Image (tube, rainbow, N blue to C red; front, side, top):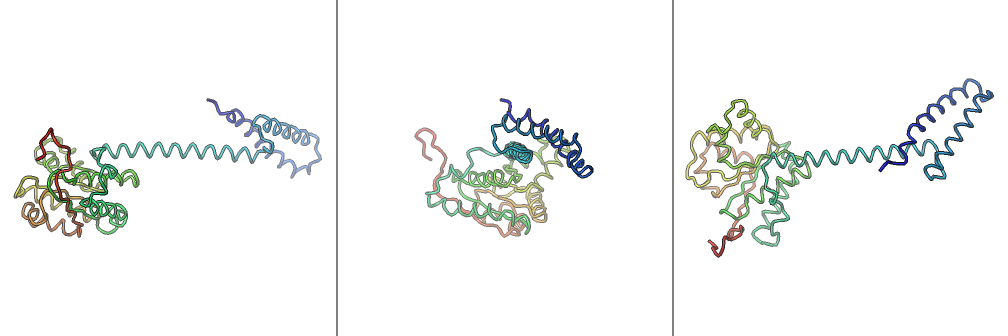
Length: 284
């Protein structure tokens, strides 16, 4: 639908030009020139027509200009909102996040989840602080299905939606495949991926040392260097594992474990039975 004010824009511009000419002529001729009076009368008539066309009883040039400015500002805000939503969607896609990993899908009334959820929200609220002080770290550990990935994903969704932070959520096995087993075959692409792991606002590494009592030395070394690099850049991390801190230390070795400790991490232990749906009548 055409905005009824749009056809008047050109007239408003012409009125403003005439107004400026009249003001200049007034200074030069002191208002005694008949031609000047004719221009004044014409200008007044056009303002009256504009009032009638827009339904306003008190319309003058300034009022109309302010209305157009307000409309333009509203359009800019809508464009900014659309651009923000588009950026959020791109960030979610790049992060590789499950859409169901949000706080609303977690049972806040579950006593086993209350402290983890509270701590995760504290991590979000302090994120700007962590960016200036060496980065923050959460170590989330527990048995399979207890909600570790969901909790970390909820943090990621909140940081993207509210603060438009960049996030990478990646299983450790996927990182290893991409960098050590040539899933990414192009060297420059591998370098770009490595830099992204180092520089993204929040790196979430899932399933660290899953099903392993001891991580390969080359992988442990890479993890330690990656964490130290992020610490130097004041970039935050979330480590997810089914190991408790003691067995994680044994699995990843001193070098990587000390790199985690350098963040002064917050430990979150998720306990209880699996919160994933059952398969048939099988409850194990």
